Image (cartoon, rainbow, N blue to C red; front, top):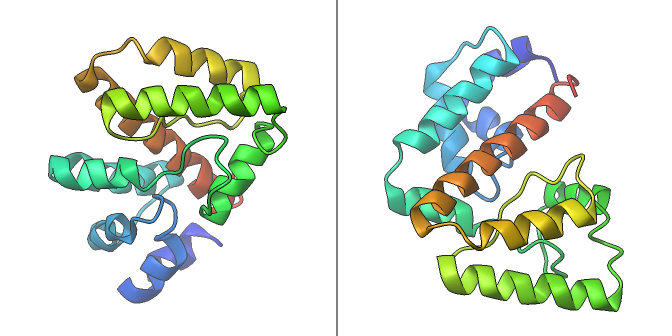
Length: 165
């Protein structure tokens, strides 16, 4: 899809086309639609990010919690499936699977939301390392880091949608 076409979409069509970019949170696209037209992918991404940044903390937390655990075998959005597969998380050994589950439980237990990482271009080792390091963050720092990672994920998804990845 081209940016010019996105700028012409009705609100309903825009949400249908881009509502998935922020995991199970079409409200982001719905609110960003009001900021059109966009001159570039970066401008569109900025509008979407601004919606999240201006949202109440409860809405931001719901967005974070809409993401699946990494390495999970639970149902997740197709984009998440593809992203995790690209990082090798669909082919964990039994030992790796147990390790990621243990880290997921520790992380969620400490912070109250799943570990978020833009996994594109990352290896399993990179992911395990990030999980272990970020467990030492404060809840406030980790909340901000989770949102920043979500913004990266959204940027990758938009680039793919617009054929600019």
